[in-house]
Image 1 (cartoon, rainbow over the protein chains, first blue to last red):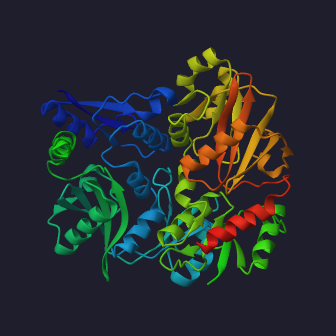
Image 2: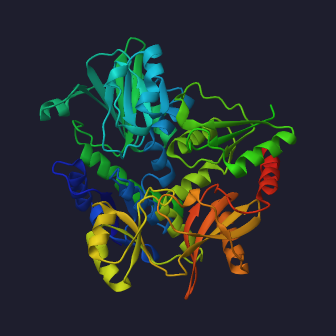
Image 3: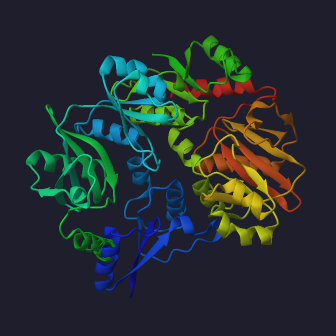
Length: 269
Length: 264
């Protein structure tokens, strides 16, 4: 029996680790398929499920919608749609971090940037981000009221800017494995983006384990800062790019192989 | 604690919702302390968010209200409608697939880009194009040619429904706690929610389909847009707490239902 893993993605990106993951899976005799969601058309009355496992790789709303419909049609996703919905929403991520006692900067929900003026005066600089990870605009740091962007529509996620070292730490999870990369911010060159692999300290491992449990993810990334009060989580995402993680493609392929082959067999038993 | 909070949408200074203001007065006569909040007015600390009401009534369907309601629910608060059901209906594609597979009559539909939908348009003659994340009918367009298709989609993926011609009026079916009303409104992109509806006869089929949709989606107070076409009755949209404007006898039913739900 031939098994197949399908990736729902945006247009193929040069250098994406998931191209290497596909090669690894093919070597394990697992067929792979990449569905470029933005170039595909789905007829709701006739959705075909022809893969044993789907991996949602695009952050677009169209991609999420297609995944939700395929899921209803019986498609099995690596990350169930309900968990995917949480991880794509920074408010729900923050709520989950708080409920799981995972350290993170204080955060606010606001209808627009102007509404944050009072918080900016009382609490100091803010990092403002769209609440949906699908939104194209990235984070901005605002230190003064006059700099609050007029054109940023809400709901907005605003995080207090916590003093921290200039290097960011990216934790990556693959199954029960935890990998850490130290990266200078902002990273511009390819070398800077790859960063430096470091041995995760016990606090990092603790945070990664709690995040994996809290969000129910096997493939995840956690952005950390080193503040005077210790490590803090500033972002969490699923199926990240794993830049700088040695042998990540092989490790991910093994995890997907287990998921598509071993897990159903276990369920059958 | 005997408190109910209505999360309302800002409709301009001094605006009072005719139906909801009467419902609030009715609830106060029943002994409830009733608050009304516009979530857009002030930012909230996610850490400090506290549940201070027995029930939060989600009259607003704004993105901000959806997010605040999700945080309230995550902190143990109760919302009407259940925010989980509200979040489900925000995803038009999911609702389409879910209801279609359960026998609800929904026009043939597609998710794709304008270039992919051209051949469908040629076959069908006309399509209704809806933005995937839209609300209040904003951005909804009837397109009959390729140019209109491209203008309506802005290069993004869109949800496209086969056009069902009726008499030019959408049937607006309103449900609250098992009671059903029918009305009709001419479609007006992005503004139809402000207009009063005209009462229309509720057929047994409309009633049955509307109640079944509520059961399937977990909605309690909701609206269904339907088209009465030559080839039958079609469901074209599902909304959370509607305005109920222009219908008689709605307020006591709403107040009674909210009262019951707030008591648990």
